[in-house]
Length: 119
Image 1: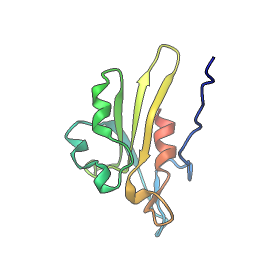
Image 2: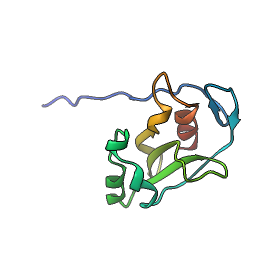
Image 3: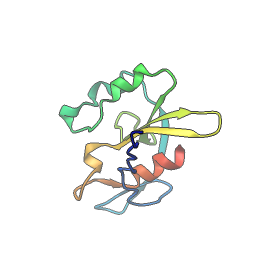
Image 4: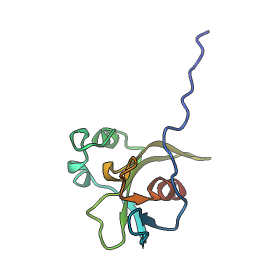
């Protein structure tokens, strides 16, 4: 019998906040998580630094893609999550911070934490 290889979580929750926090100024910004549309994802490409092909997630009708944005600024996506609601749990297929919210030069902390808390 072939052994199934398990992969662990491959994201870091950098900070638990009720909002996202600007790394440079320390200012906090309230966020909202809303359903993303296919038109939201036109600018979400690997060429622009995103790791996953988010448009392909729309091929799965059982999954919903949600975007994290700052309140009153819904056009700048801070992060995305793909969720599938099962009868007894919610399955998180993908989660990703915007390219400008990754690494040591990221702008905002708390993006993954907000998305996981929403899920």
